[in-house]
Image 1 (tube, rainbow, N blue to C red):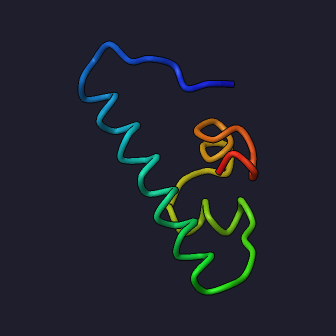
Image 2: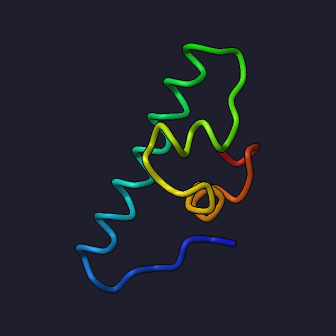
Length: 62
């Protein structure tokens, strides 16, 4: 599943910010531990687990 294109600028900005938060959360998790789970990253990013899957497709994609 790939992210859908947005026509409204604000929605795209919000989606980009969410993606950024998820990546930052994953980096932080990896700095503290050798591995990570999607659940842990989602909690750190304050998003639903499915949002992580929607944005990246899989743990490997992240």
